[in-house]
Length: 145
Image (tube, rainbow, N blue to C red; front, side, top):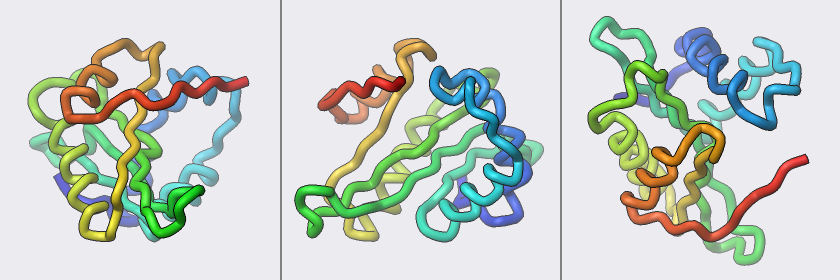
């Protein structure tokens, strides 16, 4: 587990394509590699991308997040997960837990007081159940059109 660098962007794009193609809202959006490159650069520069590697060094998972002020209480800082994906063949062990814990530690060191993780219902219940086991509670349901 480590923090992504600009050198990881091409591998992150490759790793993230299945996520984008399976995401219910993003399936209908034409997302170019150039757009992804720009977005990932921004997150690396202003937030964090935690990557998990296989034994051979290839990327098998990522958690991207940023910190921003709480809209109603700007002195409170919220660490928000933007994307969290582990390739299907590598969803075992403690990789997902370690990614969330690393994200929380990074955010704590930068003054975050609240944390937001999300799961996508159409991907199945496992990620939501894991998030709850890590102490998170369901506080809001989002709808998209």
